[in-house]
Amino acid sequence: MKALKIDHVGIAVRNAQERLRLYRDFFGLEISKVEELPERGLRVYFVEIGDTRFEILEETSENSEIHSFLEKRGEGFHHIAIRVEGIEQAVEEAKKHGLKPLSEMPQKGAHGTKVVFLHPKTAGGILFELVEGGDE
Ligand code: ZN
Image (cartoon, rainbow, N blue to C red; front, side, top):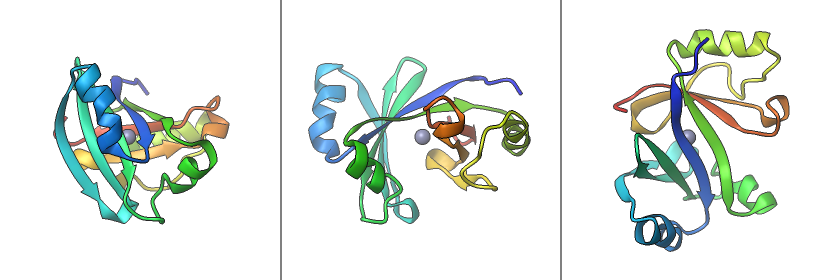
């Protein structure tokens, strides 16, 4: 497998409007899109920086996939997303390298992407997200 680029850096926040003062008002970055992912309990703000972006994740329900993260660790760095080609094959290769995918099949990500997360305990404490497709 060959990783293509850092697609985005995921940041978990409790209140996006408050946090956007840092990204938008201080760093001067543009919010390109806001997307609701109700099945994952998330509202996602895309903040463009150079040819990559921050993905600001705000929980919209107690079933949110970032709920326990926020409870345990509070706001902050959540994951780093690596763009790949052929995500199904990348998952198979990840397993051969002792990495544990959090789902067997790619899930629907923001921007029409397919995504799979790798368990941080198997990846040096970092939650990696593999990303394929979407409208960039
Ligand atoms: Zn992400």
